[in-house]
Length: 342
Ligand code: KG4
Ligand code: ZN
Image 1: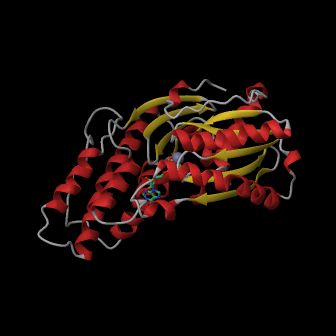
Image 2 (image 1 turned 135 degrees about the horizontal axis):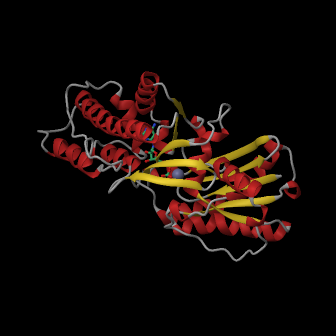
Image 3 (image 1 turned 30 degrees about the vertical axis):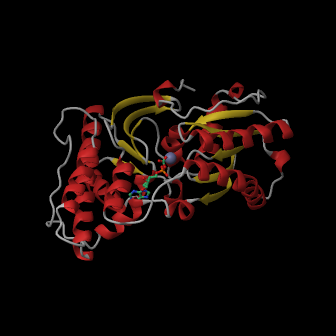
């Protein structure tokens, strides 16, 4: 079975073809980062309009890379939520329009389920069950994953998401959008001893997170700075910020691993691409003797492959999930816990 995946929840348009027998056939992606950069963040209306322009050319690109025709697609999976309403509507209407034109069934996929299952696309995928740390621009959650659709929320952020903290702190330092990769690069030349930022909720007895105080700590340092911040000082602040955030993420992962008794930790979402986080988790995993798994770098941030893949896994266990009812609705707010088991 060949599943077309359509992702358009935020500022990436992704289309991909996943074959349940042969794996990922092809994927095509357009990132709108350059377009949003001059505004310092995603402008929803511009995002929607760009998805309209990109979707069909990306479909042609994916089909030609996979060397298959549209008619060979068996089902179409699209991101139904959560995300920006207008952006989601574009992907949903493209998917349902194609479904109707090609007479193929469609199904809506949860964006976070896509992220959560994306490490299974890697050449050495983890087995279930595992603990997952989902760290993206909009979410920070620790989950126990026992199978497709079997997700138990263990803890989550009470305010800003990890990616959001990266983006907002980067903006305070005058770095361009998206801030995650930029602040991470800058931190590499920073002095780890120059700034000691708070580690929010490090000692709370639960698995919840809070990052808005960390961002405020960066803001305070920047505001109290005498004049223009020099490059080295910026790097020092970036380093202090990244170290604090990574410390908290790693500590909570270790607690979740210990409490669950599981041996596998899976990292998903855009912040999963972060070098410092990967290095710290790898070191902790080696010490505590558990395995840590990451998606391929290109599948950490939003993409169509994870949506095609999540759709295919869902359909494998329940083919009836895809229907020829093309009257779609999107779910901009959609807690992952509301997903039924496959
Ligand atoms: O998963 P994603 O593409 O979109 C959402 O579903 O939110 O994640 C985007 C987030 C952004 O906040 C971005 O700054 C962050 O992931 N990010 C990173 C890195 N690459 C992307 N944060 C830290 N280090 C990175 N290398
Ligand atoms: Zn995402």
